[in-house]
Image (cartoon, rainbow, N blue to C red; front, side):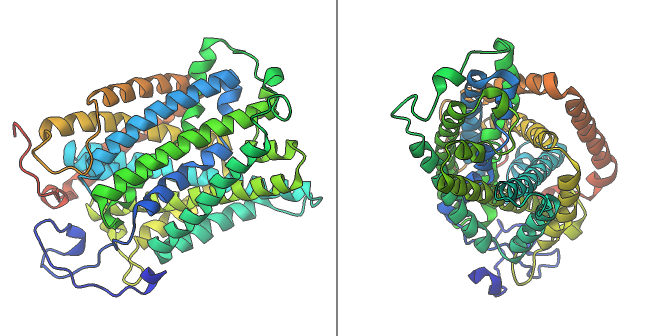
Length: 481
């Protein structure tokens, strides 16, 4: 935790220095620390997402049955592979805090950047809320199974989760993501342990796919409906880009950490589906709060049950921890660029963290955690993520047109352009339809919220945006400018 006592470094002022580290008079300001490597990037991305294997994905089973959920899992895997490839190219070039927000302000413009910033903040905050809810439910269930029914108030653990992790993020990014690296690896290991304990090499001994798998209870429409929660297997992998300004070598660490994280999640998602659908009837699995923990309980192995309790707990903590990191970086970047009040663009003088943005969202997350059902918070997070992915596909097309290959240095070049962008747009559109089928009211309300926020930005905040200051990359003028 060396970053806790980091001295304030006197920074030089090259032309590429971000405005966050200097004021208009040229005096020195405090910057975020560049202390992270590829392992931390992997831990940030997988740490946020791995909880999707421990909860939430199984609602896709309830929408269309086990086969539909597996189809949605793999289609969502294709969608997020496109996201990871596109994100890796742009972010290894636009290495600034805010991730997709920073990309949008350089490539599209202020209004798009403002909306992308809101998408990120809403997606990560609602994911953090979902993690807090599951943490409380999990501890309550474990206490009940241990004969302590009524002895635990799950709301207290929801609040404790948010407050403790906000404090950790306040104190420093290196300690925060090092913790994520350790507990994310431990959580992934428990999935592998459960898979081995289920004896996949001996069908019918532990796993009863022949009796439980069935067909498509709702026909092909069930596959479409399952796409909604199929995204939950991977939602948040794009969060690796939020650390762009705190990574030692963005051109190397961001693509490597992001793509390694995506491969990890594809393996974990398939293993999770295979084990859970072989141990539980789909009608129960489709509404379970903690499916992997429930699967471990059904094996009758007390040690395995304890391991999956800890794995689920580690996964929810790692995810909530990463979400606080990512939401605060996006909000901090928006404050620094005057899209939001500049008060949020401050860096702590000792810990070098965006501490005001971190503290601001803690009470908001607590209110949602103790008052909103889990499927609703998951849906709000998914919808915000979908909107961001749609703009991401448009961003890479504009990025390649404005700055073709060879005009600016890139740390990574994704293959087969524009095919990944077109696939991404197609799968996003399909998922919008899936969400509308089950949660049409929430979809319309979310769209109305972002339209209202856009009007507010144009009328009240756009006048404060300094276009020259926010464009921080030393690139040539766009082609055709």
